[in-house]
Length: 340
Image (cartoon, rainbow, N blue to C red; front, side):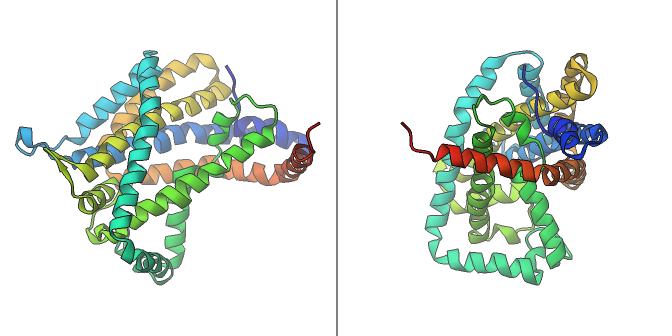
């Protein structure tokens, strides 16, 4: 059992650099980590998935739409079976399906973009105009200004890749590597893939299909965009919408399982191992709550939780930056030497 992450490098690393006790800041970060696990990796996932699955029309049952509470119960039970019941086979199956589903999502997005390739220059122009002129209000929120747009974009960008939040180091700390800098270089790929590539593709799909003016938000807007842009039927299944719905099911499940581990490590740091099992039960309850709560309420909780975790982590990164720079320089000097 390996534990690592911001609470440890804040307490030990920052104390070594500053020469003063930094545990209070580490405790605050761990508390933020628990809140983030209940919000970022939990409620937001369940809420987005419930929104997307609710869009599915089931003709066999007279056009029945799956209600949010049913999606929440299903996801909570599935995650409970893995993190509390110890049924690792479900997690193993999901680990194999997620890359396939991610590939299907990318292919579907590229197909929609290819079908609307003439509009790509206009879409990028629309993105920049919306950011600097306030027209972004149509696509997301009322009263948009540049500052509000930037704050909203930073918040969602942070949610998409967790850069600076302090959660990813908990996972990377468990990796077996001879050189910590090498693991850091691997971590640098996450914002590139998640935000710059995948999120840009999703944005182009939403803009090119006109779904951004539909009044929908979040997963429902993405669902509509893919349904419009990839209007292919396989029996009763609409291909574009199915990719989003089933993709979100797998992504939300795998993310929820991962974040339960992040929360576990924070609980162990603060309270010890005996509190891990009660935390896991609470975690599954919050999955259900996230599915049935209003979207605006869920995202306000997520934004607040991210702030509590990110602020002490960012302060620690500034304090430790000189040490990290020295280690990185040393690694590249060593790594570039010719092999004998």
